Length: 83
Image 1 (cartoon, rainbow, N blue to C red):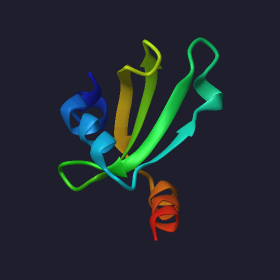
Image 2: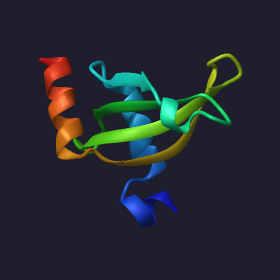
Image 3: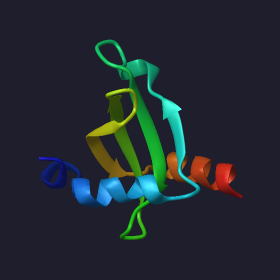
Image 4: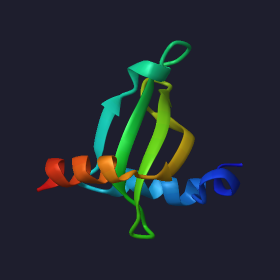
């Protein structure tokens, strides 16, 4: 469903976790039911993605909820954090 809606596979989304410069932050707006995080990073396809995920089993398991191409604002933020 994510690839159809956002054009990003979960395999590509998973690769963002290997970006040494990825930026992760708490997603307070969507954490009512479970604690969610957003990660902004470069994928294996050289695209800047925003990946929404949660951690299970004390952080041993990461469940990807959704992933999409970063907006211009998010791209600027990533650039400012990694330069």
